[in-house]
Image (tube, rainbow, N blue to C red; front, side, top):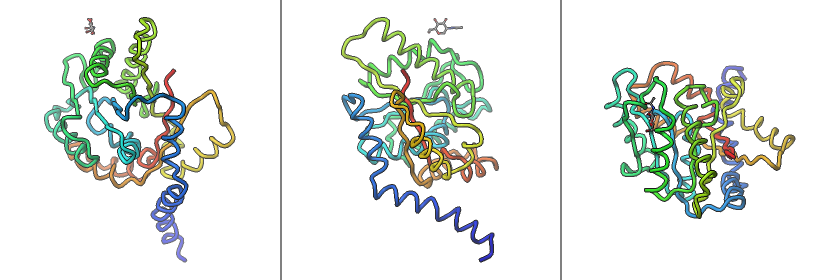
Length: 263
Ligand SMILES: *[C@@H]1O[C@H](CO)[C@@H](O)[C@H](O)[C@H]1NC(C)=O
């Protein structure tokens, strides 16, 4: 067989083979079981916090799909409209359309547009901590998913959200807020090499779990096919520059999300 055809088939067929094989073993369900065995999820309600419209499908698409399939009620908190190029109004609508693709109703998508939290400028982290506290209270949330300390792409806005969450957790620990435990998982940033291995990083991830299984370090991995995330990404029409297409083909985040506990 011509090696080009072989390569093409490999790239198309392998994700399906992985997906259907791991589904036989209820791989994703077992990850959720691991989560609920270790932590007391009072309800199946989760708040996903991100910085800009399109972060949800570029980075968190797999998590959203798997949690949605497993009956979680998902809320989105998007802290800016992504107005760096004055497209904020358009991008708000695009985010709602992406929500439709992921079955997230409009009333569960909260988009902020605050002068001190603007795309591309330094975020006011104390203010974000306040916003998060308010959302936790008004939605009665005890499970949050967001960026880690490297923010996947090292974007300073993503990292600010992680810092704000730290403030929220510190505040809660210092004040011993009773009966309000908060579970926060962060989306793991992997090295650039692994980031662009696409679905192949699944094997590295599993090898790492096998050989470096640190019992004190909670982590779960979800695997999905990328079609829903791609469809959601296509709703962000203002953002569809050529390198986005490369991202879709090569990024592990279209297939894989590794979530770790924030202590
Ligand atoms: C950031 O927000 C906090 C809380 O609302 C506020 O007290 C503080 O003055 C703000 N920081 C700046 C630099 O404006």
